[in-house]
Image 1 (cartoon, rainbow, N blue to C red):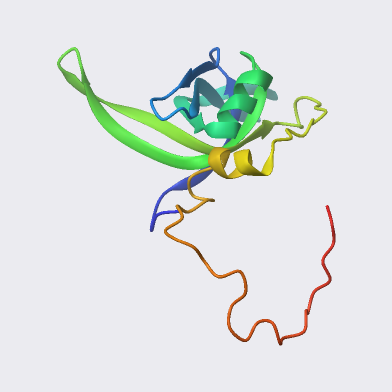
Image 2: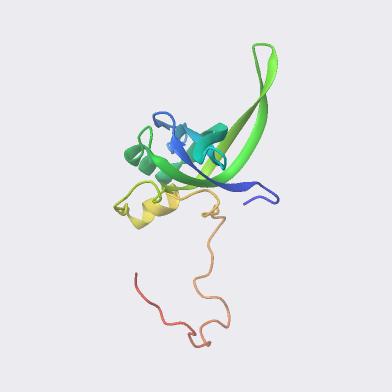
Length: 162
């Protein structure tokens, strides 16, 4: 995680089909458009109406990309957490802002749907290669398995298998 990066969580709906590609390094990437609309209660009319609307592009990598492509379809209600970026691009002679969200987690919005999760099982070698880049740091040489003085210390926490 970078210093002062903008981390957000947005509830919305999948607004496009999920595109899934393999990049040059062999990692998976998935992209889709997310739609989010504010719901506003009108006290006089006693009705709900749409307020501010937002579309943004969501991208995700590795195992999250594979699972998003296998699980999401257009119209699904989702909750997306990740790093928000806003950049300007030139389109037809005008500079326009483009809002993008690099997702670190995507899930169904259980306020609007039900879900039955199925865990993705992969071998231990594949987990490191497919994990998010901020979770797994690159290895730079061999690390000692036991730090000096650690062997003499008693274990404070019992290990519980999951």
